[in-house]
Amino acid sequence: MDGPLQRRKMQASLPEGADNPLNAAVSARDRDAVAMASEAVRHKQCMLAFQPVMQSRPPHQTAFYEGFIRVLDATGRVIPAREFMPSVENSELGREIDCIALEKGLRTLVRNPQLRLSINMSARSVGYRKWMRVLERFLLKDKTLGERLILEITESSVMTVPELVIDFMDRLQDKGIAFALDDFGAGSSTLRYFRDFFFDAAKIDGQFIRGVSKSADAQSMARALVGFAQEFDMLTIAESVETVEDAEFLVSIGVDCLQGYLFGAPAVSPPWKDTDEAEVSA
Image (cartoon, rainbow, N blue to C red; front, side, top):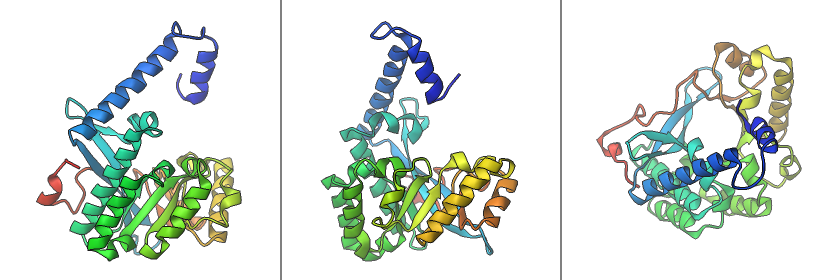
């Protein structure tokens, strides 16, 4: 039994307080995740893993890569963001990790002039001065970097501070930076703000993509999301594409780009890797 709904049901059946073994286990797990991420940041044991985002139509080239933040634990294992970001997203540590991801992404763009790259950030970093200083420092050296940078912000994160995000995007428009709404469709409250946002792309949440070729309900939802994004002239990207059948259906309804294990898993050793990129430190 797993998933948020099952955990809530289990928690409801157990006594409240410190004696609740499930609460204690969850708290211990979160503390461990925070400690691991904190140690990785302190010792500069952070890196990016890169996954291709493919054009859905000929010549089917890589449109850009997405850079996912990773940390190394005490044993040297590469730990994906889903294992620690939910526990640190609302904290100062989460802001530091966003800064590290941005800096590593920009360094990758500097070393690879033909590359276009997307980097994830939380809306909570919008007002974080250190994050902006990282961006400004790199753009001061090369103003063209912004034209190859895509910032991805999740739908749920956007809705924590929508007005601040709108202002933030407005201020960065003249730097050539593109914006992608990540996990599009996971919530519905974003829709009324679309007229004011400056998103260039919408990444359809994986829950509507996995197995879409076999699910009429998922197909209806995918069509609706693609149609909505197209109304606002946004590029559409399908996340979590895992089968040829799903990819073919998505192409048939007009999805512009495809991303998922069908085309490659996130890798810390990307195709363009050279000796300069072997560094792990931030």
